[in-house]
View (spheres, rainbow, N blue to C red):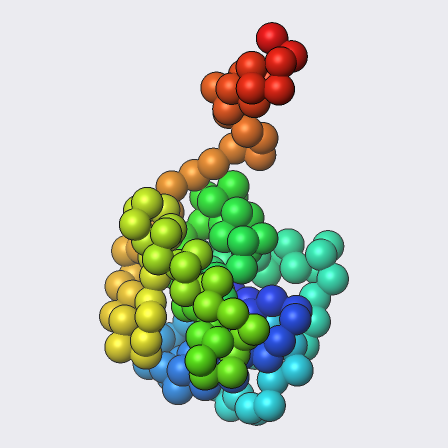
Length: 157
């Protein structure tokens, strides 16, 4: 199963349209959290809003996560060892208030931690690659080295 999430602040019709268009070719269940979408998908199952405890179920069951470049979703995928494709919102297209999602996506791609698609063609190429594996995994807490560095910096050690 593929789980698509766009966050809960703004609709992201461009991403949902692309996923809905590609869904018939994928031969896999797709569930999308679509929050106030102005587009009505025909080929994927959608939910408008998922409370945090409800969100975990499809997220944990999914073999692949597709998301806007929201830090919460990225960190959750890295913590749970899920492959994730980031498809950033573009402020110039009216999808957000600033281009911070582009910056987030570029940095994570540079670090090699997530898959990033900047357009429909790149998203399609990644979606049809059935062998996507998690590119990185992180723990629930900061590393001991980071904790010690912060403690040293603020004078606790």
